[in-house]
Length: 259
Image (cartoon, rainbow, N blue to C red; front, top):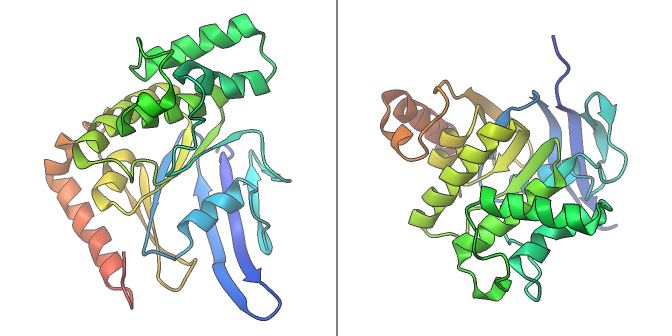
C-alpha cells in the first residue's frame, strides 16, 4: 500500500495569551492519499482555516504532527501552496507578472519564467489579458490569476481556504468548472475548505465534516461519483442528493449550529 501524501496525527492547536486558553483543534486525524481531493466543511469557528494554517506551517502545532510523504513538517513546507479567500494579488503588477512571481522566487531564468507564465495564462483561459493590470479585472478573472499563480508553484498539495467564496453564483460555477478541469489533469492533492455543501460534493473524493465543539472531525463521507464530473449537472444525480442530505443532517445535528 502506497504511503499517503499527507498525514495528520492527533493534531492539537491551542491559543494561549497568558490569561485565557482556547483549544482550536483537538486530536484531529486525517489521511490524504496522493492525488486525492478532500473538502472540509463545518460551522463557522470550528477550526477549518486553522487546520490549513497548521498544515502549511503558518501557525505552531501544540501537539501531534503533520507529515508530508512520511516526514514531519518543519516550518513552511516547500511542497504546499496556499490559496486564500482573498486572492492576495499584487494590484500594481500585470497578470503575467503576478503569475511569474513564484517562478522568479524559484530562480528560473527570465525566458523560462515568461514561457511558463504564458502557458499558465492559457491554461486558465486568460489569453489576451497578459498585460492587464489586476485592478482592471473582474472578480472571476482575478480568481483565475490567483489559481494560475498557485499552479506556478507546482506544489504536491494545494490548500484552498474558501477560494470561490467572494464570487457570485454564476461565476462560481464557471471558475469551479475550470478548476476541476485543470485539477483532473494535474492530479495533485487538495484540501479545500468551504461552507457550501454542494460545492464540497461536486469537487471532492471525500467530504470531512468538523463539529461546533472546535476542531473535532465528526464524520467523513466518501463521494462515489464518477470522474470527469460535470460541476453543475452532477447536482441532479440521485446519489448526489442523498449525500447532500446526509452531510446536511450531520451539520444540522450539531448544537448551536451556525454555518
